[in-house]
Amino acid sequence: MSSQAHDLQGGAGWRAWLLSASPVSRRQARLGRSYIAWLSFQSNHLAMLGLGIVLALILVAILAPLIAPYHPNAQILTDRLQYFSWAHPFGTDELGRDIFSRIIYGSRLTLYIVILVAIIAAPLGLLVGTSAGYLGGWVDKVLMRITDIFLAFPKLVLALALVSALGPGIENAIIAIAITSWPPYARIARAETLTIRNSDFISAVRLQGAGRMRIIWSHIMPLCTSSLIVRVTLDMAGIILIAAGLGFLGLGAQPPLPEWGAMISAGRRVLLDQWWVATVPGIAIFVVSLGFNLLGDGLRDVLDPKSGGQG
Amino acid sequence: MSGETGRAMIEVDKLNVIFGLGADRVHAVRDVSFRVPEGTTFGLVGESGSGKSTVLRALSGLNPDWSGRVAVAGQAQKPRRDKAFYKLAQMVFQDPYGSLHPRHTVDRILMEPLAIHRLEDPERRIERVLGEVGLGPDFRFRYPHQLSGGQRQRVAIARALILEPRILLLDEPTSALDVSVQAEVLNLLQRLKQERGLTFVLVSHNLSVVAHMCDDLAVMNHGVVVEELAVAQLKRREPQHPYTRQLMVASLGYDRAAVDRFEDFAREG
Picture (tube, each protein chain N blue to C red):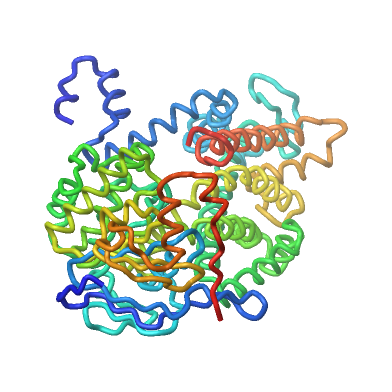
């Protein structure tokens, strides 16, 4: 490492260090691997566009108070339903709130929902799927039948039922979406586990005396995560749409929260005369969903060796 | 038999392995018995499907569905093994492309057994074992996809050796490698055996590999040991059973006339 640190050609030195065929530390090996994945990701322009959209969403959410010209709930009733102007770039809604500011603050809610659902649903599905696949027998039967039961309902309908049972609100919407979105992840993780559970490297670690939990945790899960990350990223768009759908139906975020679905719902009443009130949040949902989809497609090319990427 | 006086490291008595039930029932290994003295190499020879690998998997503890008696280092083994057994006997697999975890570096692969058995001083052990199998420190943080087949098999051997076992179970350790690399890996195994006084059980379909490596061997066909003999007898070309002779002819290379004379020695009774 130290020899490369002396390299005067700064950037080139780092590149060589990352691409070294014989890394000298765990960290270098891991970073090198990530760098190669990044190089192949970079060459996919649509994926980079998706990454840009998602990064922009994150940035906007973090910097919302700095970007937004108004407070999202500030009502100026004299300025109701105004068309685009310098003062209000995306116009105002029926309570005279600046739509641009509400979209900016709404990105926080969108991100909040997406991240929480991913954090709850993906690990749950991964755990259920890998356990079922590796342990087999009755554990597999019980876990997969439960998964089948969840899969038998349309996502939105089950989420609706759960939210009406739990009561409307953004937290309950998140719980409902998370509970309805883990079963496909469990299916994927189980299928991956079944293909690797009898491979020699798993046999080898069994012959070293490793316990089942150790095998699942450090040998099977790492191989399932990449296809899961791809799938979760592709599902983000769906999660956003379901959250917006629940918001639209009044079961998700409650007023006055600037949730995009709820904003569409409110704008629906004036759709014919003041079309922008419903359209702007719709475009926001569309752009962000598209961003996640493009990112997911790009990640699949990089992470999933089966789809012919350079892995 | 060669009449070796050494203590028996492995004793297998009337080992039977049956897969499946009812119509799908396959009696893969039938009443196989053999004895491996400490410090020797025992070969199991036979064509694909003869049950030789199945014997090895039962011996290693990978397949718990067997009946009979298996004793290792004087201790009778149950189908489920304990940690102490895995420290005593390790296995090297046939396919070095499938036996290393694709997302783990060599370092991580070697660290795993040390972590499982909580052995002290992992750094020194990893460096030493890499040196012993002829891979320098350069290879320590590489991923398997950055290694050639021979290098991978060396890593697999290092992984088996790092627990300092007394027995290595070798499942066709060279058949997936090209010929020049085969010799390197076989010589490495021979050297390690001498340095460490290891006992080997080698499964192979290749009679010349077996003649090079083994002291005694058993020839298997259709799940039965058809003949047991010392390598000296094999080298003098005096096996008794026609199946063994047929294997010998086959190992000389492809000969149309000889292949046409081959018979299927289906089990009698």
